[in-house]
Each structure stands twice: as structure tokens, then as C-alpha cells.
Amino acid sequence: MDPDFSWIYLLIFLMIPLARIIPRLLAKRKMKNNTTQTIQERQFQPSFDEYSEKPQREFSKPQTKNMLVLGELNKGSKTFKNIQKNTGLNNKDLETILEDLEKNGMLKVHQKQGLFGSKIELYPTDKGFKEYYS
Image 1 (cartoon, helix red, strand yellow):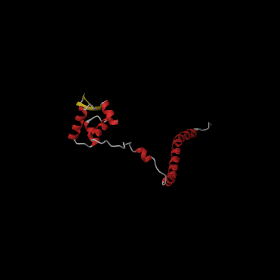
Image 2 (cartoon, rainbow, N blue to C red; image 1 turned 30 degrees about the horizontal axis):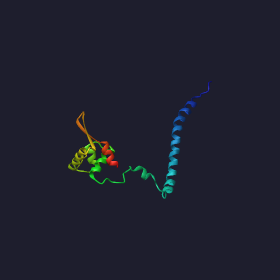
Image 3 (spheres, rainbow, N blue to C red; image 1 turned 120 degrees about the vertical axis):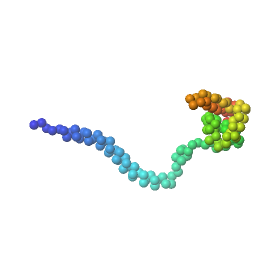
Image 4 (cartoon, helix red, strand yellow; image 1 turned 180 degrees about the vertical axis):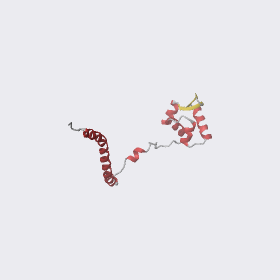
């Protein structure tokens, strides 16, 4: 009579899932214990995470609307709609400012043909870049 070793296969196939489940359960148990301690420990410690999550803002505001629009161009806004959304200017004011910047050589207008028609992109020139950052 041959001995029956089928119980070894059962043991092996049960060990694989248990080897993955047990560390997860232990980690959850540790997390529950640590959360109460860490909340009490962190209550009076300063948190520097608040400052790292907020986007970096410029501390000096441009003095004129022209500089505000030029700043948006230098930050990467290429379309009329994006500049208007970021600056909060109305159509007429923004149009006159863009025309003025183009006349002064601080703005370059590119018209591209796309799949859905023509597309106008606005780029700052070197003169506009120097004017904004000086």
C-alpha cells in the first residue's frame, strides 16, 4: 500500500494565498494602531505638507494690464481664451492690449491650419520676455 501524499499539494496551494493575505492583514492592524498614536503625536507639530501642495505663486503683481497679459504669455498661455480666463479681462480690453503688445514688438501671432479650421496662437518675443522679467 502506497502512502497518500496528496495533503502536501493541499498545503502548498493554501500557503501561496495565505502568504499574500497575512502581510496585508498585519499591515492593516499596524495602521489602526499607528493612526491613533500619530494623530495624537502630530497634533502639536507643524505641518510643512500644506506649503508643498500649494502651487507656487508670484509674490509681486504686475502693475499694468499689459504686464499681466505679457506675464500670462510668458507662462505658456497661447490662446485668447486661456489668457482671458487667467487674467479675468473682458474681450475688448484684452483685444486692445494684445494689439498694443503686437505693435510694440512684444508679441508674435501665428495662424495655423488645423483639422477644425484655423487656429491662432500667441507667442512672446525676446523683447517681450526681457520686458516682463526686467
